[in-house]
Image 1 (cartoon, rainbow, N blue to C red):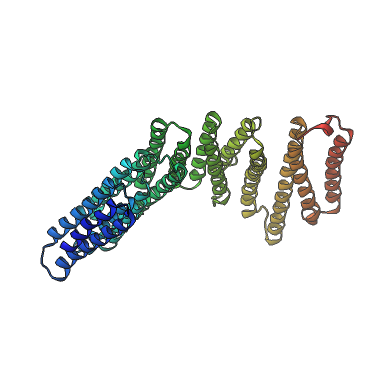
Image 2 (tube, rainbow, N blue to C red):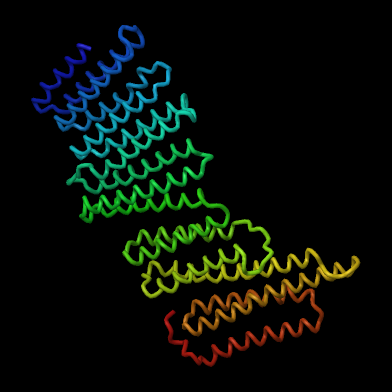
Length: 483
């Protein structure tokens, strides 16, 4: 230990002569000698008790931090962090001392927070976060029990709060603001993920508790974003504010499936999407618009992939109402976004129009399918032959009903395309009508008698002739439209 202290003192002579790098190397060697000596005194030779060794190592770490601050040397702060987080591992007794361990780690993290407030050393927070998570994980794997959950939640929440405040209170690096901004953004994401991951491990089967935690975290990140706006109003901090807003929206999105079940997850995501898109249109924050689009896509996918139970009531049921809500959200997006959409947003607007039609058609088709499924499950008639024939009748009627719905929807879509003078909408209608025609010709009429086939062909031909006649006459002067 005397040799370690002597090395640290001797290094000052080289720093005074301008050899700072060599001076820091000698200090690192001296610090290593001190840590090694204290470890050996406790673990190998039992010369001192654990409490004395721990206090001595903590004093070495504190001294190194003070040296780093006074000499403006971040490399010394890195050495101090390495020694500080190694201390609990070097002095482990194999017993559970959660409160003492985490209180020490919290003090170390607070020291790092103070350093980044005094010096533009936000990089230190990364090392501190990693060291904290390693110690928490090591302790949890060996000692964590549900009985310790309340105390553990308090400590991990304290750690998360310290690292969340780092980017907000840290001193700005005027010479390298861009790099510091990247560091702050990554730190915010890592801290949020580590904190919620810890909560998930402790509350995995208690979804209600996780829901409230997710919403509380979202509220905190919104508050942090507002704090950045007030404390750092300059434009360079706009990105980090958006990162915090993104994290808040992410946790709100996570809370939806945690709290809700079944189709209500889709409803929650679509309502969130509508809110985000409305706020984006009001504030001009494009990131919120993109997040709203993501929430909308998640809601639509959840809606389409969800396994619905057969319904006993047509139209007035949860499935149809959920689809109606999705269609309404998409309709509102199309209506209000089309006049102000930029060129970059045009592809999404086109996707929204296609999704609008697809969801409306799916909802109508599912309602018709449920109606005929009930009829086919209990066919009318007596005897095997009559039952089989009755089932076939219902099936043919179901298939023609599908075609009728699609054809009528295509015709309505075509009318809207003419009314709005939108070539894109009319192309949707033409594709849908063409698909329906192919379905009728190749599939539906295969089960019909010759007379019904002729009637079907004549009806379809009439629809196609009417559409082509309107285009040929160009009554609406469509040839000069731009869309």
